[in-house]
Length: 460
Ligand SMILES: Nc1ncnc2c1ncn2[C@@H]1O[C@H](COP(=O)(O)OP(=O)(O)O)[C@@H](O)[C@H]1O
Ligand SMILES: O=P(O)(O)OC[C@H]1O[C@](O)(CO)[C@@H](O)[C@@H]1O
Ligand SMILES: [Mg+2]
Image (cartoon, rainbow, N blue to C red; front, side, top):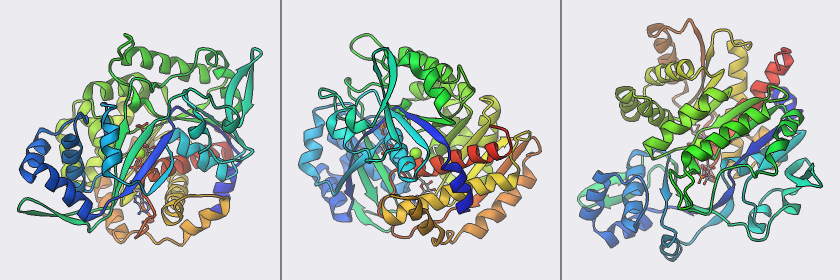
């Protein structure tokens, strides 16, 4: 397995667009209890029923947090009211601050794994943000100087007046208990709840000056991992809107692919607004080769595409059969080359039957993914290629055999001849240092090892 990672490490990767500061709180039962008591259980319950899609006042946060804790699902809810930042900072002491955002996490991970070359682009790069990038020689930020593309380390490329984006992350652990009125709630699974900053000043785009150099960046890399589209707002006060930013995002992908058909992976993240979710799916999925997401996200995606019954079933029952069915729909309707879904208990790939990789190779790629995530969950961070080995000693989760059985049943029931569908159980760390970013880690391990295997076959 280490050999496949070594092959992947020979690749060069571009990643964009989102990096932020993750201010992490390790939630205790008492902290949740205090929040509920502050607002009153009845008021919290009523707001939970309304299911606010964004945080406009503190009780919206409490309601969505309690909902996430009750289901144990990874969720992210936008914070649109900038003034509420003070409320959060008064109510919580952050245990850790670290780099967040798909592009930020993935860039540091690839750089620490000694990939050949890692180019990371984020439209905002303040000094505080730039300093969170690891000081590795293989990590670059593209700038334009004298009409040419220049690659600098992010720490040498920051811009003094850029905004800093801070997301608040609430890490919760299975077994945490609190009371909501007369109901006792015990958190069923460990995970994270993200309060994502969605302020006017933070945008997702490529600067005009850099855009003409995207084809050159495409030529320099073997693959691109793009994310952050969830941060686009439907409307901005300067008249720009999601349609504008998505049109530009489409141009970026086409520019990256102009000189060479560089493979593009899109890491999907939770989008509460159904309207925006639909726009991101319809505009971008058809242009990329590979998509990754978690189990809540596939349900949300299917719901936006009109498969609400199937989506509800995935939310409620977590059945493998439904996820396979959803994956088949998605890969067909969007004509993706490969779709990767990560859940607590298993990882899954779905491709069309003519994918160059065999099912066995696809499974090997997923093994890299879960081992890398297990290493990060155990250590808190992956700092060197050596750290990968820590993941190898993490056992598969206790439902592993059950998962495989259910999967074989699902395959018999559903028609899967036109597809390759593979599944592996996850290596699950009992007491993870943190869980935020584990999905990004899985997708990075999966996509880069997928590319390495394609390359071995002469298909890249
Ligand atoms: N304790 C753990 N040990 C190993 N892997 C984990 C653990 N907890 C979660 N994971 C993996 O991380 C994934 C989380 O992905 P996701 O929800 O996309 O998180 P994020 O978006 O924060 O990266 C889960 O689906 C699971 O496969
Ligand atoms: O949607 P946003 O605000 O760009 O944030 C993405 C969030 O997802 C993560 O990248 C984890 O997947 C966090 O580190 C980050 O807070
Ligand atoms: Mg994720």
